[in-house]
Structure formats: structure tokens, C-alpha cells
Image (tube, rainbow, N blue to C red):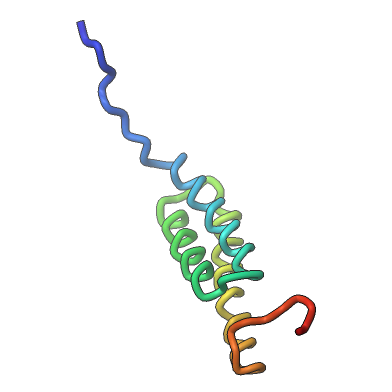
Length: 91
């Protein structure tokens, strides 16, 4: 009689769903804060999800686009103001 269940592996398509959603959320948040950190993380997670053939392909593509937009926004802010910080209220 076996007391423990054999180890199961939770790698596959279900894991990529979470990766695609995480990419989207980090890309979205990255538009507001920590562009330099969250943008590249969103891009990497989106690429991983797309390479593993996620069922949430559109969400991964949105995460990829938002991650790229994070870096573009950072480049525009640095070139326009000479700083990577910005405020919603313009101060």
C-alpha cells in the first residue's frame, strides 16, 4: 500500500496561462511605475509564454506590447526631461 501520491509535474500549458497574465499585469503596471524593471520582465514573460504555446496568446501579446511601451515611455521621458522620474500632476 502506497501512502504518498507520486510527484506530479505541473509544467505545461496551464503554467503558461499564468505567465501570460503576469506579463500583461506587469506591463500595465510598468506604464505607471518602475518602467526600467517591469518592462523587461513583462517582455521576457511574454516571450516564454508564446514559445510554450500558451492558450492565452492575445494576453501574452498584450504583455509584450506593454513591456515594449514601458521602455519607449522611459526613453521619451529621459530624452524630454533628462530624468527617468515623472509625476501625474506635472510637478
